[in-house]
Length: 482
Figure 1 (cartoon, one colour):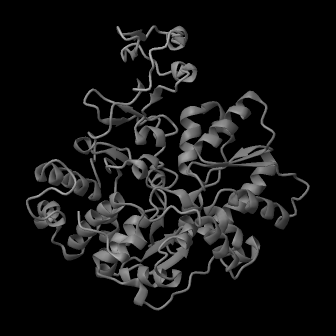
Figure 2: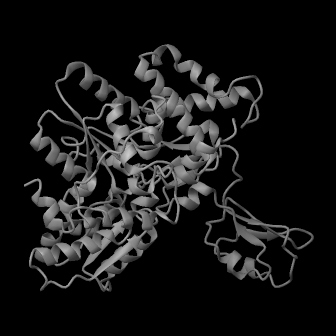
């Protein structure tokens, strides 16, 4: 693979992201020129020219994998409705997962590992070294816990470690498979797979098609709805230049999804006072998790639409011919857009990774552009992008609506594991809170799989962006559209 240049280093965290971006960029470039059908087979060869492999055992496998990446960049398998898809032929380099005995085993006489194993999966050879029968092992981990030498380790694959909802298992060919019933489309496995063997479907072609139709027919306008976490992305340019870049791509107007967050905060606060307990509905991966793993708590999910859908609904109310494209850090938003509650309002979804590919497919250097203005929302709508932001906004919404008699006891769950713990406590009746703010990604939206970078500075950038809002209250922001 070609080496990173300085500009690329600033744009992406990893070479896997860079490779994914290059495929998206080439697919988009040909789509703009109407030459994709003719050149689609040549894209892998263009990305990896020559006869020597740079990433895999041979050039043929390398290009075959790139061919699969091209398919996903073009929308993926139409028969597979899941947003997250495994590239089988790319998933073959990880060691077998599960508990294994390492060379640290001293062949001790205590044999505690054998004693605690509930399935009799541990035996010893003539040197008294322990061995685990994989056909019997249930991966309870008790043997590892009692080994005095820490000689037994759990070699989970990166994708399995990343997937906190346990939707990933390994098939007989040693490739990862995704349980679509459990998968929340959060994309954690996509970002963590070191070989890029798991990817999210892209709808970049649909967006290009919308823009081209809009320019040719003049019958509708395409609106870009941008997530507030954009403030922590595209760090090599100014936010205003990103806004101008979107308009240069062909988007008619750029609107903050944070304005939808302002609308949600007001209605969520009111609903909370009426029902007494709620779980948030802003994060689609969290909502999906509640529905699949805690069906008895579904009744408590807020009935409000997410900020993405809420602002898109408003746009289409004011402009019935509008087409809306949400742009953010979240792969789960692609799944949410397919729900019946969102379909009438959201036409497509892009990640920040895909937006970067769009800019570069047009050879656009956004650092040379003038700064546009993005100022639709309040501070409180903008901080939805980070964990705890929604709870802070609900406090403000209660105050602004004169509902301060209601005491908010919120728990902001930072990542799906914290969400699980809070939901378990609610199920058992021991949760000391009346509002669960669920964020599937660590840090909130700023930790989404579709981010360009995943840095610790992102929370501070979001708060800084929020403080720059012209409207200092939620009511002020909403009053401008009512």
